[in-house]
Image (cartoon, rainbow, N blue to C red; front, side):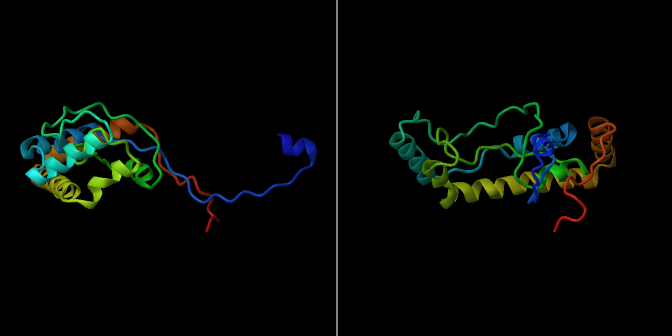
Length: 171
């Protein structure tokens, strides 16, 4: 509008664009069931001490590491800064939600990054990998379950068809 009215010219250069991230309900239920079987990661006394000391330092409630698995929450479509959004519109995806960080530490701060350099993050990663592996085994071994995921995905996305938002000549 304004550029046309003033005779101004401009160029655009899209570096990246992403579809919003979504999660498939049936897939989420399968992953949640496996997380519930596994329970929380096996925290050590050292892990627990570090968590409590850090919580005290940042004046957060001193509760230690989470040991309870939360209930499955309704997934909300959200933005993403990677291609997971694009992928989630082409195949059913699920998200892992299990305790793998120190409660009370805001993300993208020094305190939020502490656990990443410790066994807390490693234990969380391994636990998440186990939940994903068990979920994939469920799908490989139960054709009816796999079909339920496929049907749920088709119903959830409806008539939406994924296409790249980037211009075809984008390099």
